[in-house]
Image (cartoon, one colour):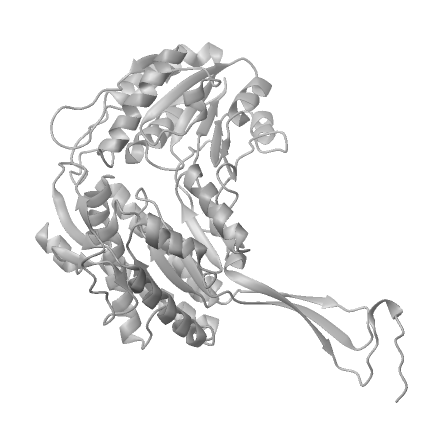
Length: 508
């Protein structure tokens, strides 16, 4: 482990704020975080949290950096992001291992998360030459109208523990090619991943003669987090986390007329109809519900299955769940690692107790694994969609099985939750698939056919509706939120005609 940490520039004790290779904070009296390995409870390393003075320094330096960075041509900005992607390729194995070590997802998923960073870097490089505006015809003679996009400024990124590096890249790389500066507050449950990424940023920026394009603030939510979301110098906040957190951020940033990208809770369902290919259904459900120990915003939470196939699917899932190896996430044979901490274990157990109180039945799993670490057995639960606990998102491997009679019934059940992130239907009936994707179908930001709910693909805009927050990041035209739109009118005549034929004459 020591060699792994050393390769990523992580020490036994680390500082919590940085705007460049030679500009780390040295605060030691604002509290200390201990990063804990959820597989065994051991402390990996410590981080001194940044102070409010450190925060102020980061913002001031970010403002200075923005004035220079915004004037760099976008394709050249793209070249810097390309170098970031190349550096991530070199450190993929080490960084993927750190993700597994610090938050508990298996090594394949840790590596996959770093690959997402590499993919969004590649995407952003291409995007740097495609920040397109529009030209429009003016109603005035010898006039031209057009639209262009300018850099917005400082982008504050607040990320969650479950994707401790990829979500930063989704925002930071697109922000960078747009001419923006990123200030990142990572999860306090995964601070070492933030430090590792900052070290990579510093290395690339320093050899290109830049500083402050990517900055880091690790600190208390009650102080540093509040400073960030209240700061008018930060026009955009991109936040990933719970709906409760998102509502708070949306309210605060909205009151100062700032912008937000909110990627919040999911309560994702798969509809399994009578024509579904079960050889595809079972592994899709398994990966969606058990992968990352059910701690993805896109994790599969609910299975809405045609009633005649309910018993068959339950038995197939029990058989599949029994084959899931639970253990050290860095062991290549492991399919499910631990929950992130004891709090997550407590939430898991509390949710299952609520299920039983409301009349549900645990069909498989739902136990704490004895020994060190925060391990549980994934649960399959017979439930009704109307249960209060089913209406909530529990960040743990709990899968609710709900029967339906007809497709209309299934869609009503599917949409009858507060969240609206990801969704899927498994079917070989084209009418059912098209209905699911229609105006009367899934109300989620992501709707899939014959593929599960988890796994966002770079290039598509990622985000959801309702309590999921409505924001979009990563692909498509999501870049526009990181910029400010400007409409321009050019008069190339020697006269000054007014719009709508208005006459406003004065004597010379």
